[in-house]
Length: 209
View (spheres, rainbow, N blue to C red):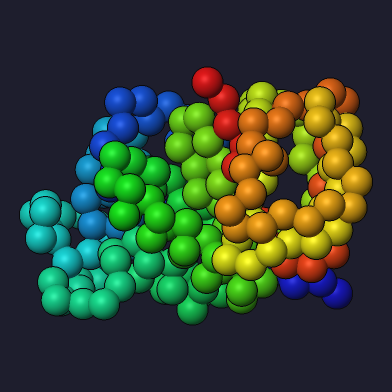
C-alpha cells in the first residue's frame, strides 16, 4: 500500500490585497498560521487548526485553537517553524500561502523551505495569486489550466539531460546551470507539457500576468 496523503496549508503573513484564491486550498487541509497569518483567517472567516509564531509584529491571538509561542530570538522564521511542525506531524502535501511578498529575503527563505520539503520527499508548493513555485527532479508533467507561463531554473547545481515536450519552446537533452536564464517564460503549446531531467533539481515556477 502507498503512503497516505496528508494535506496541510500554511498561511504566512505577506501583505496581499486579494485572498479569494485561498479558498480552493483550504477545504481539505489542516491549516497552520505563521504568526500574523492568523489575521488572514479572520478575514476569510475560518478558524485555523494551529498558530505558530513569536508574535513580535502582531498580538498573540485570542482564538480557540492550538497555539505554539516561539522565542523572538530564534534561528528559523515563523513559516519555517510551521513547515517543520507540519512534517513532524506527518503531513506530506504542503502548500504555503501568503509567502511571496515585497520582502525578497522572506520570499527566498520560503523557497528554501520548499527545498527543505523536497529533500524529505514531501510535496510542497509556494503559492500566491499569480504564481506557483515548486522544486522537481526526474520526470514531471504540468497541465494547461490556471497558469499561462512556466519557467525552469537549475537549483544550486547544474542539471543535465533537460528535455521539454509540448511547449512553445521544446528542448532535447540540454544542460542548464544555476546562472542559465534561457528557460524562463515558456508557454504551453499542448494541453500538457512533459519535463524531464537526468540529474539535478529545478525550480519550476508557473505564472500568470
